[in-house]
Structure formats: C-alpha cells, structure tokens
Image (cartoon, rainbow, N blue to C red; front, side, top):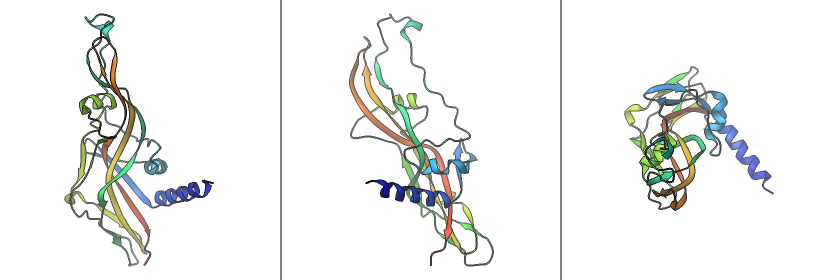
Length: 215
C-alpha cells in the first residue's frame, strides 16, 4: 500500500539529483568537489555521503583505568556519549536559496546567485535534554553543536544554459548521531542515561542547480 508513496519519493529524489550541476564543500577553507555518484546520498536523509577529503580532527581517547594509576574497578567520573553516526548529507540553510539566474539568450549565462543576507545552520539535540557539547564533540570528532554561516558577500556565480534557469543552494554537510548520554561514576556505574539524537553542521556546502525555465 506504500508503493505509490515510495515511487513518488524516489522520482522526486531522482529529479532533485538530476538538477544538481555540481556540488562543493569546504574543509579548513579549502574547496572540494563532491563526486556526482554521491549526489543521491547527498540528498537522502537516511544515507551517508562519502566525501573524498575529511577533516583530520580525531576523537578524544577515553582513559582506560588499567593504563593509569586508577584502580581496576575505578573510572574517571563524568558525562559520556556512546553515539554512532546514522546519516550525513546536505542541509540547506534557512533562506539559503540564492536568487534565480534566468537565461533567455542563445549563449551560456554566468551570474551571481545572490543570498539575501547571512544564513546559518546550527547544531541541535533531541527534546529538551541538556548536554555538554564538549563531551559530544569528543565522541563525534567535530564541533557538532556549533554553527556554520554563509554571508551575502560569499554568494557565488552559476553558469546557466540557454532556456534554463539556475540557482545555488547554500548550506552544510550535516551529520546525525544517536546514542546514550549518561553520567559515569567513579565506580564505573552508568547513571541518568538518556538516548539522544544529535545533529549538526560539519562542512559548509553549496549546490549549483539548473532546470528548464518553466515560464
């Protein structure tokens, strides 16, 4: 009974994928292109997009009591997160679509797809759970609770073929992690455990899109 909905979603996703001219993301200020074969994963909320280059930030190592002066039945007290990555992909910023570039000429047209102002994507945690973002960062390996912004002055150009219109969607590669957030006592017991979902921006990203001008 769900086949129609699934087909509709698949067709919509395929159309969105076909409309992407190219896609870029930024690691430490350096621009990298996302391979075309990853475009479908880029737009699928349940998949993980494979990027050619990732940041080199490593997870913080947890102290093993056997490696230090602590007793074998003792732990370093504090909050911990045992999450795992469930998905990653493109998340467009609020008001993150640049202005449309319409090409009614007979030649390719290159113009800036302009943002109306600064737009930002920030990290979030499910429900009203209060967490230490430092603890979460130590597990996921990047500042998932932080923000990534695009400013109007960072708007870039797009090349549009005759009879098409195009625009740039500005946003981020965001990751979603799920797992237990809990307090680990000095006697190694887990307390106040909550299963949480954490989502946040990892890399600034932009997608250049074109399609036939419909008017």
